Length: 276
Image (tube, rainbow, N blue to C red; front, top):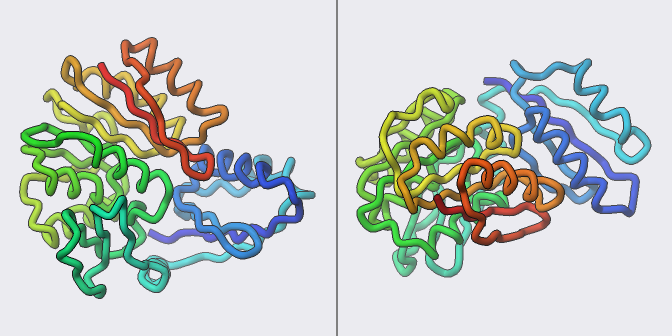
């Protein structure tokens, strides 16, 4: 899959303007963001880009940002990931690395991710916060659903933390293939990878659901999540901002019988915990 890279340069001192623009771009379909010294880069699959519709989204920001566009073929996109992928550590317990990085056996959990274009190497704040939540949760013997699994990183960590059975779902074929490859790398043979969306969720019940996607998709799919969440089950949402998204997500969740517990925040991104 080819991607378009939009390289945005900021022309304002009001930092919140960048957050607003990123939020609008995420709602539009951009799925990966990278900070730069002059602003940020945003990536969107070429097949879903409607340039006329995007122009309407960008118009209100025209005096605040300028941007350059580059088409990135899949091969080059993978090279971008590899060149930028540094190992990360989460709470001194999780070490995420690529195959070309040395192992660190002193960490309790080591997750090996081959960096491709699939979103979810742990570098984004939402993925990091989801892993922080996971470290506060007992996964022993649990049945887990990972929606929007990207590279499979969250499902793999849950497997290493003792989950009994896991299902990892993503609509992107590259993410699906990446999840399978990474499960093999980590010897996580209790994870079933599925290519699809909410309609692909097996009709089974889960103790824990992890959904790190974006606000609009979460709102559209939330009713299905609740259908397959066990009584007293836990669900973790991320991929959205504290303002105004958290209130919108919490209200929608409440209507479906989910109770808000708490949330973590990192650079205005949040990851929230709910129980059934």
